[in-house]
Amino acid sequence: MQRKTALQLTLAVLLLNVGILLSPRLFQRQMPPLRVVFLDVGQGDSCVIQTPKGQVMVVDTGNRSLTGQDDMGRRVVAPYLRSLGVQRIDLLLLTHPDSDHIGGAISLLEQFPVGILESNGQDTRPLQNEVVQQAKQRYVTLHHAAKGEDIELDGVRVQVLAPLSNDTQEPTNSHSIVLRLTYGESSLLLTGDAERDEEAHILQSGNLTPTQLLKVGHHGSLTSTTEAFLSRVAPRIAVISVGKHNRYGHPHPQIMERLKRHEVQVFRTDTQGAITCTSDTKGWKCEPYTRLPQ
Ligand SMILES: [Zn+2]
Ligand SMILES: [Zn+2]
Image 1 (cartoon, rainbow, N blue to C red):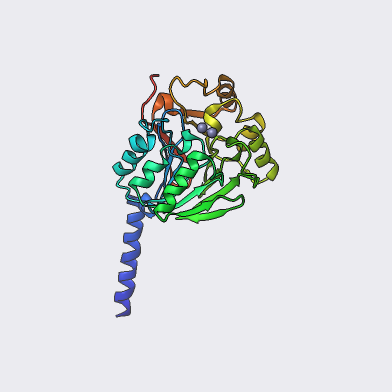
Image 2: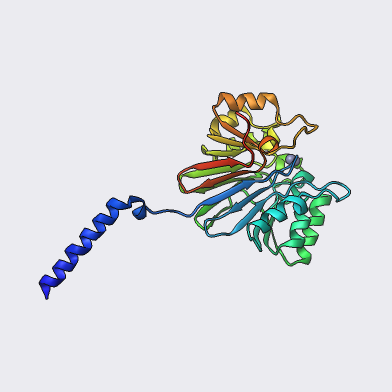
């Protein structure tokens, strides 16, 4: 009886070894990916994040024209979410109340159940007030982002680095929510339209560590991405969310030059469409929707 057990054990070990030899990947721990998509919403920002277990976070929603006709929430973000089979937005985060970031929020609230709406606290600004009222009518949980907030979502750590001040009267860009996400060894910094004063405050706070993937602040404007900030972040990849032939001249040639000098691989939504970045905890793989001609 004992001999039979020993034989079975030997056989099992042997089979296991054969299995390892034939298929080493089978025994490596594969982590489900974190998926981050920077949508092409013209001049504006919208980023869709899917956690490894499928929770959905939308950071900013693109613009809506004053007439309400051209609405990136309705035209781009909602159809994209539906194409993924998404039926609910767990967290809708609005970095600051400028229309190129929150213009599409009302359409998203109309079309999807939203778990939490997180804002930067500047809720008296007209457009943001409209969004907040819409969310209240739908019994969405409202939350103001606070510096030092540190949550975990399906193994993804989300840290709020800014706004650092409680002064909701400061300019909207300077009060942008800045987020740092980490998943294993991979990291991502979402900066909204943070400008040099907010970047300097974040640097002073000492909470910013090198980050592999950077969403460039304020669409590549010269007001953001200072030398000091870029040196601290030291990204490997940067994404610029920007509209084709925009009237602000974003991204600024000096910022492009600065990124080049720092040997950062740059993706842009105006020339390459949506940029999809995935991480298996080790680092990022980013794919543009359109490949640039070589
Ligand atoms: Zn903006
Ligand atoms: Zn702005």
